[in-house]
Image 1 (cartoon, rainbow, N blue to C red):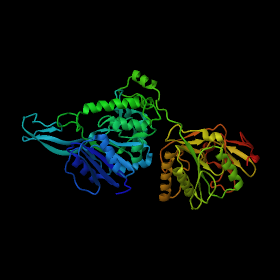
Image 2: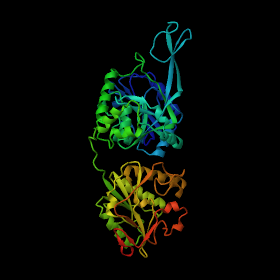
Image 3: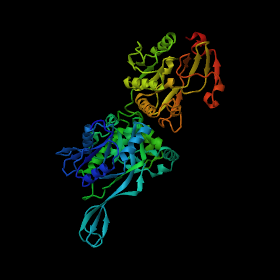
Image 4: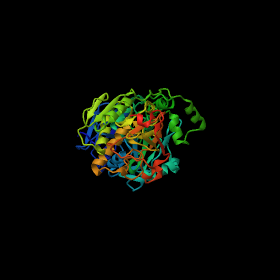
Length: 547
């Protein structure tokens, strides 16, 4: 099975309920989903099914290594690691995938966690004892047998987690009382969480490998939730809980024959904890762009953290300071622009010194690479041009450059502080080329968009998919992140920046979108705030001499 939606990765070691977990998953999936199981140093009978793959390890290699082994076999866009003793909601896979379409792929997502009541111990007298280690009946001392009930309990339902200064996993129920949680829950039923429990999480397969999400140097067992959440947050991503679906997890913490499946779990946990501290608490992980203190402040106050511990974390420098992000330009044109205007604009773009990918409707000798899309001029075509350029460009940051805008060199000095925000240069005048008259008003324009390249790719993929399905509508918001209507493409926000000198949007008789030259042309005066008119633009000179 190629190009699947989701691969569910199950590392298993001495797991009594693996078969039942597999059967539960198969009966509840609704997307194009497969299961990849790793029998890590043991054998058991499993069902035969076209959606099930099984890897047999003669000797145990450990939970993290086994999860990586399963992921290497996956060809799906998304992967979900889950424990081998879980039950699932109907359509859980589809509901998780749908949520990713709303929030983007720079995310690690978890479902709501319920507790799994897997079995009871029942004696011949009918006395029943809740799941735990084997042993005689506590009431009559008679022998007991295991009675599998497999019930996903509706209480508690866990959605928010953190870790303390040890670090040790903690539930973070107080976070549910905060206004930011309430707003996110009300808007999308998707809420942020500082950490995760570790028994079930989902992300893209690309992100799994990019973040080395199961780092085998941490050892076989322990601190997985902290590792996954820490790497996601500190690299610029987000961790969210999807309240639209759930899974149920069976906890085994009582020891005996109801304990952890790997030997010496205590030593493994301590090793993982020590390594996590070295990576995150000392800010030594090479994938982070934020220090741990940033994450702590985002969720402060956090259970298990004293003011003293907080101060110590804030004092640690970022050891592996990331290099400055690389930047490049996506230039797009319909090839209809007056040559004089086009050459003037291209000259300014070249001065940036950045790599340029031009995407055109006819061959054009401009940029480091020219991609030709033989399409008809229009909004959908323009979005396809942008996407093609973003995918071809090989930089961290991308500036979108339209063929009829004069970009000042100071525009290209900006670098986005965050990966999941759309940034617009607000310092832009529009110039009427016929007479040199210029106007300024506050507006976020597509030609001024800059952002994380991978983040922009995900947006324009979704935008194109929506247009091809429903047709183009301005109600989805022409500029990413600037509208709150239900038809919007996603929920990410937009922010403005101002270059030292302005850019100039040249208005001529072949613009794809019409220009407005009077405040009366705006339905709402909120859309033309700080209106100014002039015949000269700072840094450019007289309007009638600019072109």
